[in-house]
Length: 141
Image (cartoon, rainbow, N blue to C red; front, side, top):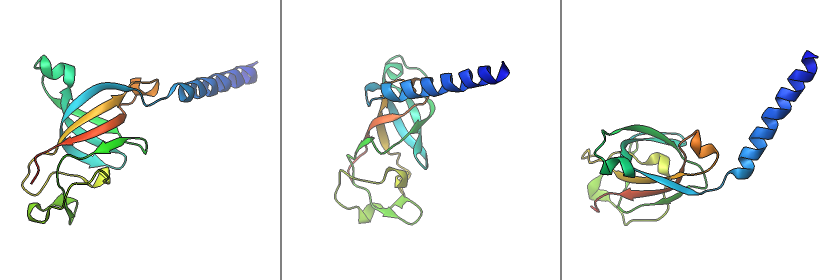
């Protein structure tokens, strides 16, 4: 009897995961705004708050947001990567709409890169903060 229970449990987990993948879409949800604090592979730590929380003057906090190949990334500032992922202002090149998100960090003047992240509003988005769209909000140098 215990083997059949294990089999039923395994099948149930597979069905739940399969249904979750079927329900996964890049639906846009709440916006998280702040500055890039730390960048890891396939994710970014942003210091800020949800758009709805900013209006209520809630305290800011760190949030790790997952990035994947379907994330739409748009830059609104000039950046030139040098050395260990830092940016040198006098060598800034013209802006581009395509960039490797993982290479972005704070610039050499320690000016935070402003960021607005639109989070996924789907089945998995309820468990893991995942970005659908990222917009950099930074001054042009």
